[in-house]
Length: 73
Image 1: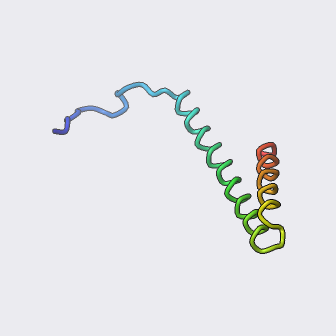
Image 2 (image 1 turned 45 degrees about the vertical axis):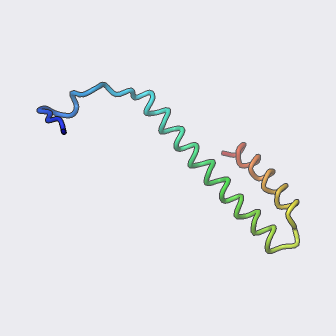
């Protein structure tokens, strides 16, 4: 059954703020680089499907843009 606590929640376990900051920064980096990779993927798919660039040029473009994006971000 549920435990009944009498008292404020703030008196619980102490928080590890350094670990919270690491987790938050990791999430921001994953969101930033993941968004960048998906946008680059859409650009390269458009180049491959709607132009005469072809599969190999689109793959090369994907790799080059990801490397450039990694260094720019």
